[in-house]
Amino acid sequence: MKYVALVIPLLFLALFAYALFKKVKLYDCFTAGIKEAAPLVLSLFPYLAAILILSELFEQSGLSGYLTAFLAPAFRALGIPPEISKLVLLKPFSGSGSTALLSEILSAYGADSYIARCACVAYGSSETVFYILAVYFAGIGKRRIRPVLISLFAGFASVVLGCFLCRFL
Image 1 (cartoon, one colour):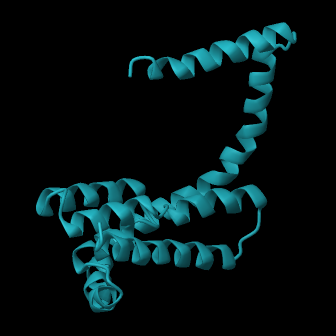
Image 2 (image 1 turned 135 degrees about the horizontal axis):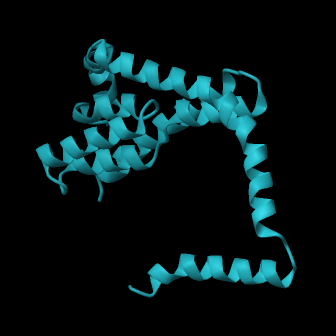
Image 3 (image 1 turned 45 degrees about the vertical axis):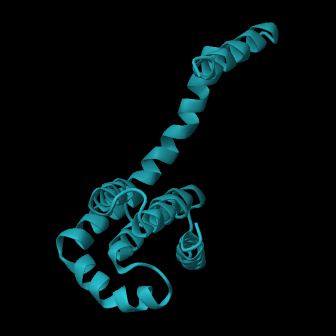
């Protein structure tokens, strides 16, 4: 296992050796890449700020609790345990918030329970859709609703399928 930790440093050394062999000016290339990335970061900031503020407002306003309680019967009908419905709703908005929820679920129900397995699958099979789309929209400069809907549907479908498969595992 100790040898695996050497893979990344050896990869960097090989890359530097190859660049020296090809007579590439590494520092100049690195700074040129940073110059190209700076405008993207500046255009990305408003989108990320909006997503972070909205996800915090969603949680602090209590709307997530009401929505969780409202959707729990529908989730139960689809095979998703109601105990993880808050995780399913929060994951598209916040990665760190969903990590904290996953930790709470694992502590409350045990790592080997059906609920915990479904929570792990829900956490691992979906993405922070709004964060990724903020990066995407900032990069292309357009705002479209279709990628949002497709991403949310795919994430939810993966949770439903994952919870179905957890019944047999």
